[in-house]
Length: 457
Image (tube, rainbow, N blue to C red; front, side):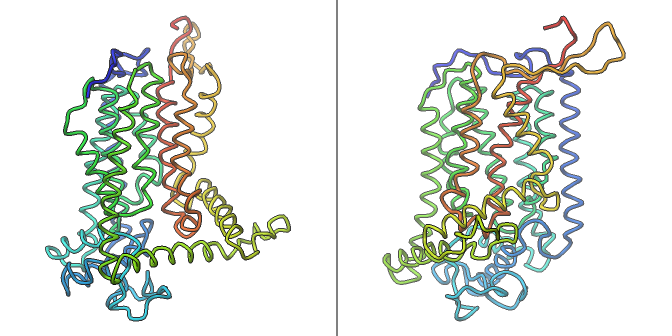
């Protein structure tokens, strides 16, 4: 499919003046990547041979027990569904410590909600390395994330030039949430690697190619399928992330057709949907039919709507929020939505949450200013009084980037709007969807950044 686009690819060599020399940019980019490697090495040493410190120990314990069940009884046992309360490992973590109401026998209870992808990956590693040395098991998701990050950074260089790519890379690596799930033993590390590869492929297609090679389309489908095999809560992120990228490229003057948006979105959703259709058939086989599987998922949804967010934090126990204590489906939704928003804001602003603080609030303020105003200028102190430096933020043409930011924000928040009850119990995972909004804020800021002496404009 050829793009009716005569606009040359945007790179550091085609933008207004570079921020610093390309060779310097490449050195900074290498330094940023090495910093990421050092941080991950220190993180692994801190975790040791135990469950994750900041990478969801609850799910890790469940996945390790499910892998043990698969190793003992085979991958085809229980129609391939994981048994995450199996055995006696980690009795104070996960479903062993907090068994669901449907759990009558720890060893035979099957988990139907999430797909079994992360558990199966652990089985394959367990057959080679065993399941005792968790440090060794973490090397696979970590290595995949580092490889995906290298591809991601390389793509940024192709799109922005080395100088601006180095700034975007630094803004990513210095964001706590970019680092914390890389060595996770459940879905998060693998999902993060696939997301970075998907972003890289889309940027490469939109910015550097007049005609996308045919292999791009099955690749996008497989990336969607892989995400669907790992989890369900990345649905909107992986399915819609092409939307703000497409809008941003068009705001730079490119004439990408609507097909360039529709096809990547369709393929990502199709791959994701196929993975979950296969998972649904597994559940139907285990429970005895399609109607039983439908009832299982319907009952789970009702249970989460009615129970999630039942405990209101003290900060919200005020007269104006008294309605949150009522018992109805509508109030349950509103209660979960308000609690989810409350938890998200805390995750944005609390350093100990290891998520977005302090870069996200700063990026929001600057990004909104760039989207609303045509030009922002700051005079910088300079020893050479005859050539004072001026820093400006201005989008390089007359097109607005507001719609790009709006769609990125929508993708980040839509899971909370659709599944607020799930977000309340898993806010530490679903809040990470806001990386989409953060990334586009940073991309627009760096793309708008211009440093010059007076009189050079």
